[in-house]
Image 1 (tube, helix red, strand yellow):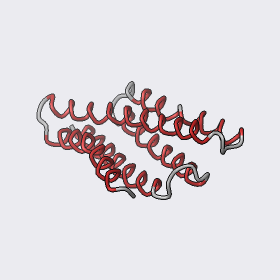
Image 2 (cartoon, one colour):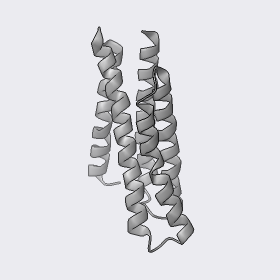
Image 3 (cartoon, rainbow, N blue to C red):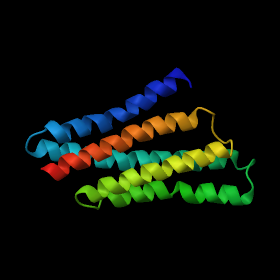
Image 4 (cartoon, rainbow, N blue to C red):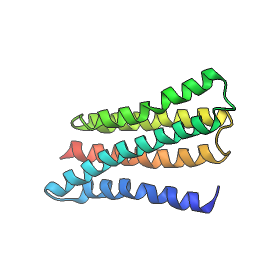
Length: 147
């Protein structure tokens, strides 16, 4: 895995970690700001990941049969839609939907790997980053439920 990919991937987890920390240690409205930051960043990242799937499908469409291309294009719009929908849910429900969407995205990443559309290191990267994101989402939801 290229070192820059690891560095940038870890950097992408920083807003999750910072928002989660603020949700736990923040006082007054600061805890709510932390939770809101985690929830909105989760939606943004799901949009980013859906865009990656669309881009991979477009770039590799010449290698895919019609059914696999349609599958990837169709599923690429699901993560952004779920992320956006999660922004309207109250309490732990939005965080739960985001966590489930990230796990679904991981399955989609695996599917791209199974079709040999992404580098061999891709699923390892996505597994690590998804674990970090889901952990932060869960911890933030717990922090909110305890207040």
